[in-house]
Length: 444
Image (tube, rainbow, N blue to C red; front, top):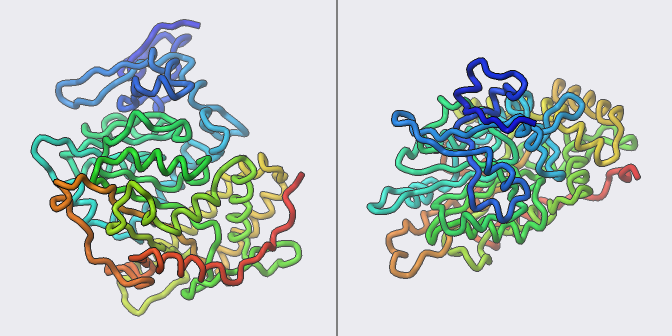
């Protein structure tokens, strides 16, 4: 195989067709492989020789060279979908259909949060410009790169690093000069990021993590003293109506149950079967970060963000009702599109394509008729790493939070913040009401 290298710019022009793979969404200038990854990532050493960094005087966007075997190292094609080639645990695609779904999901979540992140005053304090110090933001599991690039624009004085298992679908020209992306597997450790970041953001990666306690320790170690970590992940149980009561899943014995509930619970079982520590994620985030030895307990909080699946929710305030309707419409589309993305995961767990297609049909029927009103919950946990004593008074210590189980002060009405460990655990216990093992056995 030819080892002749071509820059991203060269690949936009006609070149030797036998040595060049022209995949515009992979040939992006901001993709980097950190030299420090070579010691911990099985693919880093082979990638390092294909990449270099140069700096354009105007754009300051780094570029990298590309060989014909790079796509094969990063991605694989299975049943017409593109899947990352670096983790057997994370089985969701990395292609146009999935990116479109993730962007809808992103928009629904930021509508609920009222912005890119919760704990706004804490985040702004952590990122406040400080003479002689570069502020840095890390987005782990960055997906489409949308959150990272939006943060780079909101904080132009900060450096933003996005990390994912696959290349992001953003053209070079759309990437801010203070933002870059790296390919890495969080499960392999993050020692090269130790104490480098003022904000670390981790959203919806729990299904792809093993040994959650160890991964959490790795991630929190990426924080500078005083830096803030923000966890956002899914609750794999759905809740019914504005009271957020558990609604059982649809099965052959319970055809009147909820089929979106069934699909989400089957996703949980599939991830667990493949080695995910989802149970560790669920218990750790619901309990919060108060007992983490690295974290300042005075700054820790948890939260529940409920988003309706469909446009069924209402509210007496017009703006709140509009937000619920918009977010719910996006989440309905997210769930329908997700069924196409979940087929590979479900089949890998032992289900037949016919079973999955049957679930998909029932899910679409339920979300079209909206006779059962379901909402998805996103669990949140955040807090700041304990600052060094001499800087504690300058680190923007805790803001005044909302009372337990009270809606946030923004217009979206279904975001609840829990200020204490006791409140967080009380709510976690309350959510268990009515839940029981009602699913049929997994295929052998």
